[in-house]
Image 1 (cartoon, rainbow, N blue to C red):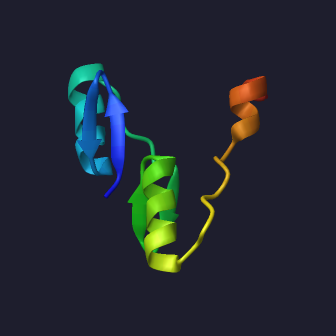
Image 2: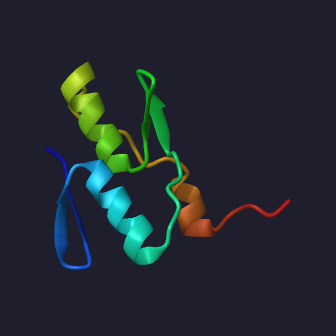
Length: 75
């Protein structure tokens, strides 16, 4: 089971974490990944799915990592 920490709480599963972020922080979830027709809002949830369902040993590298380092490209 996926465990995600926020505000000193540990949430079991992606859904509980997303609900917390909506209610407490006022954030709207953004779909980061899709696989098998399932939408994933966190890299952790997606990586857990890929390990358990598809047997991948190493999690994927975070998508758009360069944006976090260098910022979004302005058009």
